[in-house]
Amino acid sequence: MKTKRTSLTNLNNKGYALFTDKYEITMMYGYHKDKNDDGLVIFDMFFRSVPDGGGYALCAGLELVIEMIQNLKFTKEEVDYLRRTAPYSEDFLEYLLNYYKFTGSIEAVPEGTVIFPNETIMKIIAPPIEAQHIEDIILNPINSQSLIATKASRICYASEGEPVMDFGLRRGPALQGATLASRAAYIGGCISTSNEITAMVFDIPSSGTMAHSWILKHNNEFDAFMNYANVYKENVILLVDTYNTLTSGIPNAIKVFKVLREEKRLPNNYGIRLDSGDLAYLSKEARKMLDAEGFTDAVICASNNLNERLIQDLKRQGAKINLWATGTELITSYSCPAFNGVYKLVAKEKNKAMVPVIKLSEDKIKVTNPGDKMVYRISDKNTGYFIADLICLADETFNSDEDLVIFDPVFTAKKKKLKGGTYTIQKLLVPIFKDGVCVYENKSVKEIRDYAQDQLSHLWPELRRFDNPHKYYVDLSKKLYTLKESMIEDIEREE
Image (cartoon, rainbow, N blue to C red; front, side, top):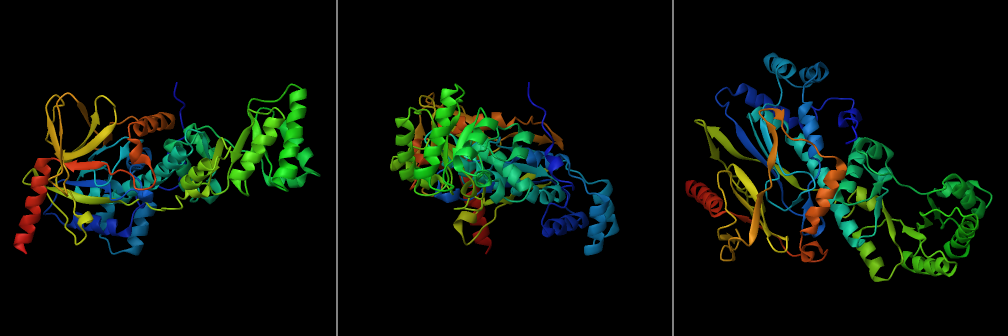
């Protein structure tokens, strides 16, 4: 039976209608006054580059997007604020207060899906006033949580299967931000969080060790350790760097373990935590000292500004750490603090038909893919590894029993022919909202985490390395490529 969780809304005592940039309200007012254009539009959300120069990203944040849209209503307080601060007409304000709600449709990749640059990860079909309004409601949760989920997956990959704990609360964004960041860290692969409200709300394992203050409060280190072990009988991880790790902390920890062993109450989960100094050297020395006394199964946990590259370096140096705790570097994505997801108009309704639109730019990476689209993932049938993603127009269909030719949309001469029967192909976007009604059942965070780990297992190792990762192919169908090129040519011809 699934645990019934506290609503995310309980983390915020205000509504979500004004969780938006001012220019979104400005555009809403413009659309409200423009009576000549009441057709639907299509917006795509996608991102332009992978954080930290990596080879992939993990999508997270969809659950909050759903809840925010389901609770999207302007309150009297909010409308009164708009009345005071901008010259909006009373008919617009009355519309917001009494009639406004989301009536559109949304498709998206499920949380935990591996995603790549420039492919649609969320598609919104709605009246322009609604589609414009929810831009930030979509971008903020997806950008922030995808960033942390991706970072966590990199850190967990560096640990080579050894467990990683999220200890980031005190350095994370305030309240709801930190709570959701810890949720994303769990999706990315962390086994637990120190953030108790996240653990409660999302039914995630919580974890933590002792504080230096506990040791300083006692008369001596041994008494501090012994008293801790008497209180927390099943989880005795002792912090050994308050005074001197090798001459005081570890010897005193061993004395405590000996007492527990003699009294036959040494728990399964016991060991030490290193929080400063040369972690590689100290962990190797600690392992020797523990093993010499017969405590070969004692855990050696490490913390102190750990990230994926430091963990990887420690592993290469032969560090004897088998439990990792990461805080600041994870919860802030310190090395890359932003996920560059964007939200762009790609089609508009005209004469009851969707007409593609395209945004050009001096910067080639900012030229959008036009039209109503679908994204497919192609996998090798024998190995299960992902081969490429294919962006196509929504009405295109494919048969995996037939040969398929894919090509690089930048260097079009670079092609790959997939023989029928050797690959599988599946849609990535699934229905979330239909005509304003949510048709998607949220998964538990544990289910999302398991799905994310399965997704990551289908990536080639070359794609997961930190330096010069293999570039994953995100191709355009011939039909979409031809449409895009013809629209660019038409615009250039008009100029």
